Image 1 (cartoon, rainbow, N blue to C red):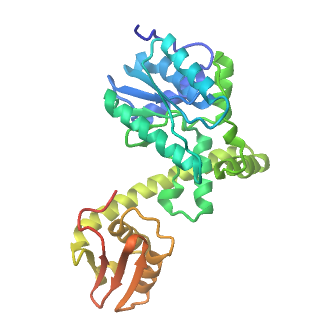
Image 2 (image 1 turned 45 degrees about the horizontal axis):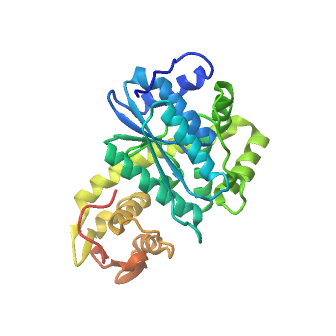
Image 3 (image 1 turned 135 degrees about the vertical axis):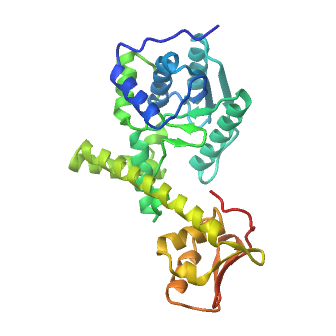
Length: 335
């Protein structure tokens, strides 16, 4: 049966309008888009689905629902059943899957990888141009703080983006307590994930200790200020990435199983742009050994005939006239 329209007005209208503003400001949706909505059964995604349902008619979009049962709690099967039953009762196409055994180290990372793999596959299968998730402003702040602890650069500190490829986050400007209040006000059933407060997981520690302490000491405005900072960092990161891409196309040349840059041209650039050019040449690797930073020091101090090991067997060599990255394809930099 077709999905019946939902009225824009009524309980929760302020949050609906806030989400609509976020969607329009970030150009998340276009008329006739098909949107796959990821619904976990928690308050954030439950709120997201209802908000998008109310906006579907005015925005002229079509919604389908996907749910992943990770099997990580005693209630997971019951939650999956409820999400699927309620969605089908309301006329939505529903896509459900039970994850395989995810036991072992890095549990949350592997669960996330499986979840997004499934969501991307379903989006491709049904022709959905967008994949909507229930990330909130709190998620953005938590991501920025977690990455700050690990020494991330501008790109990492920008945190969760409102739009990232197919993925959109219409609730990215809303606090987590607002999505919960919305569900309670509208009368929507939801289930809290016990992992959200489990101190074994880094995100839970950041949420319950760091963010909670910031809000307790300086108020909600401070949490929103961190989110504004991450937004400014995103804008700066995008600008630097565009500039670095132009410089890469001008300066990079194929050389011996990799690429090379003219050393004088590289030395003339600010260190931040040097780093981005080397990172583009190296690719998406976590350089835990600090080879890129060591190479940047070598460039700054005018060293010659030195080599620096980078993750993945890649090597940066500085000669009298060039900076070469060996062991890397000569294709365009990874974006």
